[in-house]
Length: 521
Image (cartoon, rainbow, N blue to C red; front, top):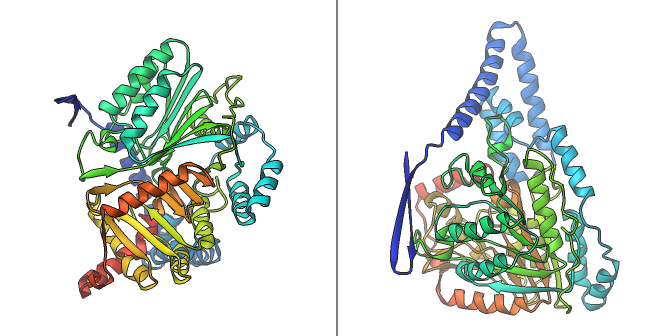
């Protein structure tokens, strides 16, 4: 098929067209479907033609039910799988064993361990002691996060908050031009257009000048935005590129556990993250769902080491060969002043992460809120635990406000988002919809002291299935900038009155069915 994209240069609109046939993805999906159907078919055939084999299948189904119930998974995640297993004989438990959990081969685990051992080292005792003396509650949050995400607490890191993707773009181009040693970039979506082309021109020149330029992009995230052989194209320019979890047609979680991370690291000194992917709608050069509201943060200082670490792990476990690290990949880069406490962190599915890191950060922030808690997310599809945390904060008298889009990108998902309004409103949570268009920002602010900016949405994709990253902040200068931006965003948003949440019987039935299976979507 042919794919078109257009972008503006000044007042001129440039339109480009290229042939793009995602054959590799089609073949992978067909192979996966065939593999699943073949395995299920063999088991069904054995039940019919082998005496008493059906007893073994029945025993396996019972064992699967017991395994699901006894697992440490969230009950919201167990329910849909239990329904599958009980409603679909044989096929249900086969799908559970094939798709429910991420499987890591020995090569993957060996590389992961080697990359962790080759990472930077930091003793956090002095920083924890200083934070404990300043705010014991903040210190307990920081210790928990560092423990479950295997990260570190940093000071001496400057931050710059960007209220829009186009603001981040301008600053990023300047920093990329000034790169002297290496540039590392990882994004869920990269799409050819004005945004990416402006970056690619710099990357080509830097790679030609001898800098180490590495790119990671998600294979499914870029399925419809880049040709299937794009990493090979980049290598012709001297850019080392790899796809995250390349789709090969295996009946496991390769279609499920994607990298939703957004990371740029320059010389190990400057780092960017936030909600902004590298595509023109994120900088409002292309209009899709009204005005695109996104946010990002720039770090300069030692905290960038953790962003470098996250990138190198993702690159190292997906590239053909484990990368040889530069000598100064983790430089000491203190910016000369304290400027609060910063914890960059990663999140992802089990067994990479034993706990739900992003969810834990949000719940801890809500638990310590005394005045207000503001949250922005393009989606609002949460489990009962997180719903209770949000409700409990509001019931304590905290001013809890959640901003979601008014113009959705996915109508079914938007319907699921709105299905949570009534319950949250009963507890006193205020819901707003960003009237100018689509809010893609993932920003969390509590009492003007605590903040989290990153890639983590309030939905199961982010909180359970995807690889994500974020930055936890305490007592940082940029938090005031975030607060001003949220106040401005609220002023542009529509307050959703509780009286407007009336649905008919059919709507309630459809939402109930969709809610049951939302953890798997």
